[in-house]
Amino acid sequence: MDPSFFFAIFKRLQAATGGMLTTGGEHFDSDGSMDLAGGFSLRSSVNSPLLNPHGLFGQLGPFADTFGPGYPEKPGWHPLTNNNNNPSENPLWVLLNESLKAAPQPTVMVNVPMVGLQEWPTMPPSWNDTAWKNFNPMGGLRVIDAFGQWIMNGKTNDTPVDPPITYGSLVASMPPAFPLKGNQFIPILFVCSMASDDGRRHGDGDMNDPGPNYLPPHFWDTSQIFLANDAGNVIDPPTLDSSFECYVVAMIGNSGSSGAGAQLQGNLPIHAICNAYSFNSFLSPGVPLPSLHNLKAGDTSATYEQYWLKGRAYDVAGFRFNVDAVASGLIDKLNQGVQNNTIDLGNKSPKDWLNEGHACVKVLLTQGESGNPFPPMGGAPLTDKSDPNKDRHIAQKNLAPLNITTMGAKQIKWTDFIVAQAAEGVNELLPHHQLSPDAFRLYLAVPRRAFERYVDPKTSKGSYRGFELVREDMAKPFPEAVILRQTHPEAVLQVADHARQPFIGFSLGIEWEPERAARAHISDIAIAHAGADRRVVGGLTHRPRLIRQRPSGRGRPTRA
Image (cartoon, rainbow, N blue to C red):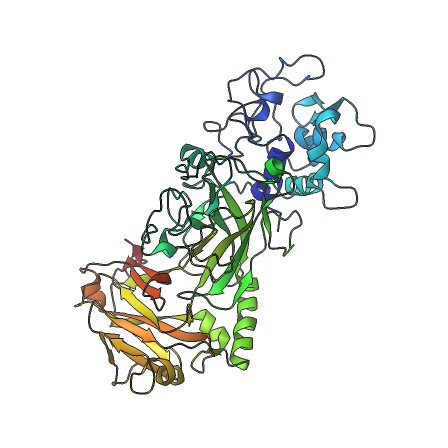
């Protein structure tokens, strides 16, 4: 397992050379500019001769030899040698490594296979190497070592290559300006809960309050948080299986007028974290994900540092999602909750519960603004319980795929999830979908003890409307389950205050007639979670995918 090239190595190379402090200049100038320092660009690390011809994976630009004495490189030379995994034969590693020696030479000779000797300038120059040396501390983890190991391991380029998290997409879509007060010159940081997010939230005190319904109603779907593989592709796996590993990539933004980050604000770095949870409608026991900012493979440190974020700009933060590590941590957390009686899983083992559920994540910007300008309504401190409708520093992604097959007998798919006490008093679960009623039915299952204590109007302060008790025999998602069938499109399930047992295991069941489903209207299936004030604070979504199947023996299933 490598450290991330894009998040751990390339981001530091950018920061060490000044970062994107301006729209152009030096290594961040346009590809055809005479001022493109060294002849190569650090604006983007995409490996594309069309989109990024003079990037690290490309070749030096046409004016690479115009910088005068001490800059002997030539147009067409390659900073990274193609199909070569020896650091000493990759010019960029050699010239950077030379700069860290006790008495670096002004230039270095690199023996490039199939090409011969090339003379390159030692970079960065001693008069401008403070940031670079800070990234390569004596006796500590050094970027140069991670860079060399990455080369030896085959140069996997994990730079995001799919919109909206590509370099081109990010720079092409500036956040709308935040309505600051007076002549304020400050950063306004946020995690994107929707496309074109500008960080405004109801009640934060800005000059143009957007109102209580500014975020989309199912903001856990629209949040700009994605799964990606180590080739930079956005992925949507049907399941997250054992031994699988991917990235969580989250868009963050700054809609203020001033830049942020340690490179721009000295001792005030931008920090972000990401937690993974058992599938839930608001919160469940969770575990932190390792930051892709870490230089050492296997480092579990959770804090991601964003070195700079210009005013009116988007960027991305990244975290490592290893299924086995996440599952192990969540199983431990669920076991502790069962033992402490803080969670009711209906007599189902935590391991089986997790296997029949899904993972979801929350990303939090924990640091980076001076003085917390425009705090969330009510001024509550940022935690993983914070409401994205109120606090711009948090966003969540709760989305599970559901494959709808079109052959065979009647089928039902159960997905386990957890309902937390989101606020004092009664909380509500509200199903939303536009499924054809002649092809689909929706169910909710509740542990029997929890049903009697918190849902059954005969024995608790809870209630259910638009649901009916299922009295006939049917397969249960967990042993001690009471099953409710939705009977009305405006169904509501009210859960009484359960602060003494903050987590209750539920299961969402989707039943369908395969032949009818093939002809029926299919929509997302969402469960919104509202607090006592009936405002939505979270939720989860199933996104059905129709799987059209041929008769047995006539080929593999095909996805529509």
